[in-house]
Image (cartoon, rainbow, N blue to C red; front, top):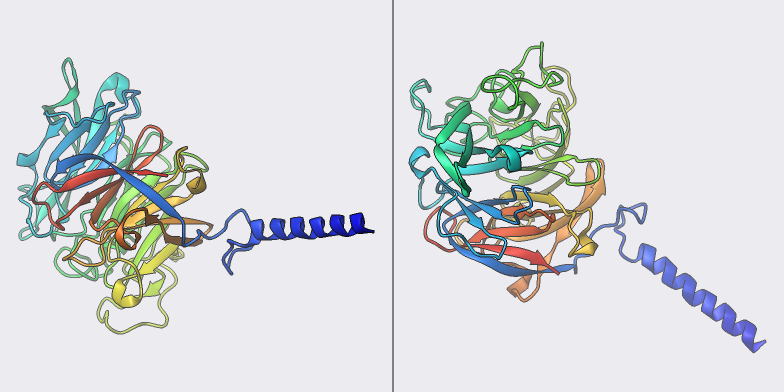
Length: 444
């Protein structure tokens, strides 16, 4: 009898352990153990690997088996961290003289994007996105010209680009000094994707903004994610399956309805989806999974919330659910509010789906960051998100050894290396000034 009671007790304990292993970490909204919410207590470590930058906004690999990391500094230079972890003394590229003069206090312009050709190891081609002074054909009073250019390696030197090799691929005149878009990326289809902000200012209105807002206007490339073929045509050709080929609208457009898609990234695994971090206005930050031809709502909505561009202080209960073509407005997969709206930050800087091996508990989760909680003190935050469709759970990743689990700096970007491990790019200043810029690797 005693043996029977012991067996029954062991079965009860085992059953309880199984129950809590599948249910103890699930949020009330989660329905299956495959997509649990992230535990709020989950943490990460960081290790500084480089310093001395001004305003590092991006770190990428050339994926050429060299182990090098390329750091994009907003002021107009690209530096190399070699495979031994040393910052090489010479710049890989210096185009400071080609970008618009930047404001030291705060600026969204500058050198913003870098993408290596998928066959860079053999052809030495790479592409950058930067804010140039207004070109001669720009409308009067406009602020700058967003420029996508190709460069090539210098002859006989894999650690230096040839500044004279610049080939301008695309230029987009920009009416104001903010909402300039940012990081560019090659997709798994081999095409180059370019995110572009709505032109700046507020509400997608004013000088250089159409009556519907540039995000909704298919006649402009502002407020869009662009997709082009840089291996054909001169200087590029249009992928034949772009959604507006042969229709009313710019054929370069892949998706639209964005305010300021600062960071885009393709999942290195899974379904290779395109994630876009779209910086919000006064209340909501958002992340979108971007699909061809979709309208993501700006300036009809900010995040999942209705917006009246003529009266932003007045909350709208209802608004249009479709764009001008009768297409549905696609909501973000996640959103969060600003601190005065009960949220954790004021400007999303985006990130990557984690496909590395060092942090197994983060596998398949979208790891992203917010710039800060204010313009005066650096208080960037790191998050992890998981889910499906347009309903993702997310929560903060506490940084070990840091006060309140936060880095205490402005987070200006998130980077990814050959092994799909992730990095935080930071500075003590909100603007492109000083030399406090640092790079940290995320570790267990």
